[in-house]
Image 1: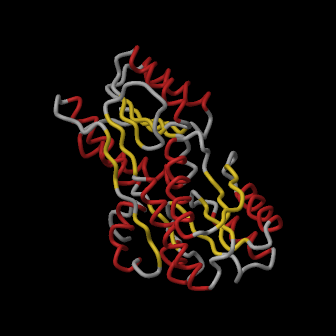
Image 2: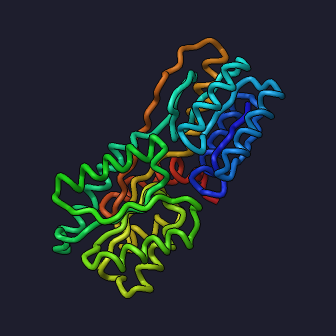
Length: 294
């Protein structure tokens, strides 16, 4: 098998890659993992390589949903089955789509933020969003669910800025710009997790450390400490390690002529200081990919 992933420099994708690898190893498959490093050109090059090698199956976490449609067309012409692991596609045929319930997860973490704002008497403040690219179906679902929670609570929105480079500097600059533009900004929702330090540093450098909350999507190992400490309000945590394993399971079942669920949505954990101790075992394994403690 081959796993073509958007960018393993981002921890979420690295963890999913480990889930794919574990699943492949336990099922007796050889697996090559190719990181596109967020480049559509590299993604197509890896796709061509997989076709030339006539692999048994391709698992894809595409750079964008439109790019995935192109990949599916190429795979169909080569008669190679494809399982999509997250992000989604604008069209095309696939064996199975393993995803998270992004809309519900974002809605639930939005409710966590609403509760935190009300607790501080900040319900009249604004919330800014630093988003992953909205061309992705999962991104659209996240924004929709979160905005629903804000709308129901009457919380006003500030800007939504879309990540392009996925760097510390980009996140820092977006956060600082929103803070300077909106005097009533009370929270930032980061639609990813790995550049959370950029947002925290911008909040601190503008003298707003105790005035603006940060809430995220996905998880980093440090969040196990930062959420109970109140540095982060919480995070909507997908289960990338489990998603990777489920993607391999779906491909394996297909190759053996077994029934495969066309669209499998895994739940997202809305984690806050109130429930993190209870959810820690599942966070360590399915979210962070820690099979056993060192």
